[in-house]
Structures are given as structure tokens and as C-alpha cells.
Amino acid sequence: MRWMTLPLCAAAVVACAKSDKPDAAQQGAAPAPAAVGPAKLQLADVAGKWNVKAMNEAGDTTLVTYVMTATADTTGWSFQFSDRPGPIAVHVMADGDSIMVKAGPYPSALRKGVQVSTDGAVRLQDGKLVGASTAHYSVKTADSVRKIKTEATRAP
Image (cartoon, rainbow, N blue to C red):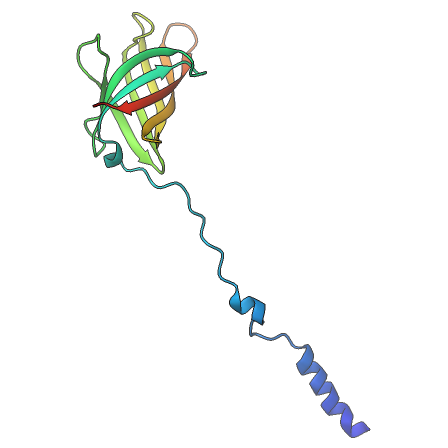
């Protein structure tokens, strides 16, 4: 019987050893698919003229409208109020599925005699540019801000 002890111990060690080979269930499992996020928005995707309406934060009242000119790169972006001379330059940067926008200071269309600067972001959604921005009014009292929702449709 003693002569069988060594082979049985060896067999037990081999049987209990972890195999480097994957089992059948692991062999057939496909790797998890990579997460797919929103497509990166290119400035060229939105190049052209857009009719924009700026609304209150609730989105139920139009505060002002303007025409925005977008180009395929970061130069030449601007917007124009219908009752004002000259376009207002817009600084842009594509960031993932959004375009970051910044303008000003320029004379406010909502507060006579007050300069305003705006910053925000838009994204392309169902053929429209939708987004939000914050208007910072230059006043002598504490910083005055207004949250604005925007929605733009391509001009014909």
C-alpha cells in the first residue's frame, strides 16, 4: 500500500492544480463590446446660416432672435441681430458632441445701455442646434447673470 501513496498524492496535486487553459464556457465568450458614445461633432457638420431663438430658462418665452453664421473651422463664426449694425464675433471650440461658444462683450439686446458677454454650448439634435448659455451683464452692482436656452434651425 505504501508504494501507492506517492502516485496517489501526485495525482491529487495534478487534479487540484489550476489549469491555464480556459474552460469551454470561457472559450466561447466574446469580449465585452466597447462603449459607443455620441458621435464627435465636427464644425463642418454645422457650417452655414442658422436662425436662432434665445429663450428664457424654461424655454417658454422667446427673448431675442438672431442669425448665426457658422463656418467649417473656428474662424468666421458670428451672429447678427436684425435691428443692429455689424456682426458679433463668436469664438468656438468643438468638444466631443458639443460646440462651446463664447461672445462679447457687446451691447445687450435685452438691457439697453449694458454690455453683455455670453458663453455656453450647443449640440446637433434632430437637425437643430440646441443648447444653453449664460449671459453675464457688466453692471456696477454684483455680477448679473441670465440663463438662456437656444434653439436654431438652418436658414433656407
